[in-house]
Length: 216
Length: 242
Image (cartoon, rainbow over the protein chains, first blue to last red):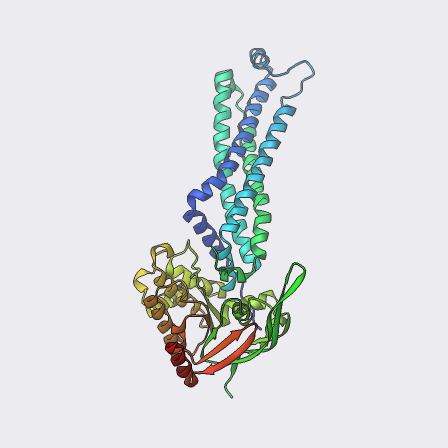
């Protein structure tokens, strides 16, 4: 008995991209929670990066301004990082986001059971179905994280500018900000992939005979 | 003797429903030879769909064996089953089951893509198939832009994509009106004659009987009777008289 050749990656990418494009509004809703979570993450970190660079400049005026803004600075402070409360909030936001993605993707699998069953009847292997869902989630994750990181960074920059004024330009931490943004994108993609894992496995294990089922 | 494309030997199938076991198929042995047009008839709940799924390699029997092209389906691993479904069998569904995000042409070429056919060749063969079912003008339309009959025509073209040996049609006319249903039946018959493909359809549409070479009647999980074409007209006559 012969076996099927593997589906070329280019073709899988095409199918996954088409599926997102045609269901654009649906994909947008799925991605929105990710955009918001990543935006929150990168906003908080951008704000901290800028405050930290002001603190490290040892400019007395800047440090006064930081204390006025509410940063807890004393002679033992080495650097400004996230406060426990911020860390807690960020973790919560990311958790809520993953749960949201799992929920949306499970819905997508349920909605598409006939489509998945049909594909299997036409010769799609379990791993082809798995790959298609992971690719879709990867693309949504990348697009959503990029948008989120961009929005969050802009918001962080604007808030810092309105709080500290032109002081931030003197010590503008380009490298740290880029690092923060790329870290946020990476985390966003990872969350999207974690969120799709269980739904995609369920889709892959679906029996082709479900395509025959009558009810909608 | 003609080559048997599908053969089942004493196939049974039971489902576990809570505490008790429901025996849906109670020992079915049949042989289907190449190139024929077969209808499986039976009331709902007779085990018709279950038998049909066995023949299509979509379900495995509890006991007994199903051979497709003299290969025991139970012995195949996931990769070989996928190959079988892709290359040997073409499926047609009652609810058409076109992939909603793809155009008619993309739906027809999808099985070719799974089989590893290159894009250019797939598109060329896809257009040819669409032409045969009379839809080459509408190749770029999505399923939602096509009528039920047109969708089923695309599904017929898709089922023929990898020149399968068997076409399995599950109530292909169930969701269509009388005239459109007849068109699809004629199309299937025509494909069966022109391409020598074996058509097996589960149905309770009596229009199907006119084109069938053989009708297998299932009742209560067993074969009630198997009628050949020449015997058929008589029984259709008796049904009409009622």
